[in-house]
Image (cartoon, rainbow, N blue to C red; front, side, top):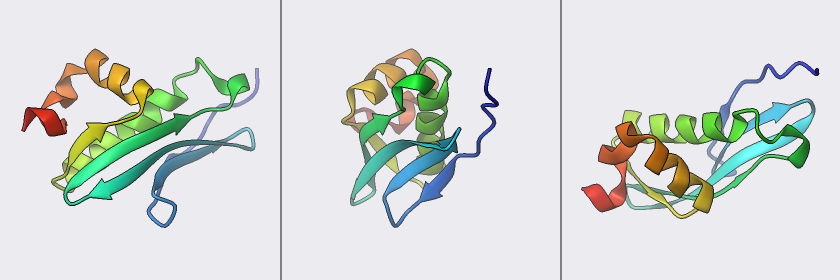
Length: 97
């Protein structure tokens, strides 16, 4: 199995959280609306799916929002399901404030 070590980076110029895994870009894109981070798209190449990379990207986005006093609006269907499975992020959801 290929080495899956990677580091998630916040790329504010591209408005995304990203990781290069085995030479492939994995990302969670966002848009800002005031103090709300709208998570709009999450993408992991098919050959890397099922390894927790998307979850790690979304967790990094929620941590960034928490650390910076933002709330989060899950627009991406993956992020909506992820947030339902992680009740600890509920206080950060735009609808819960």
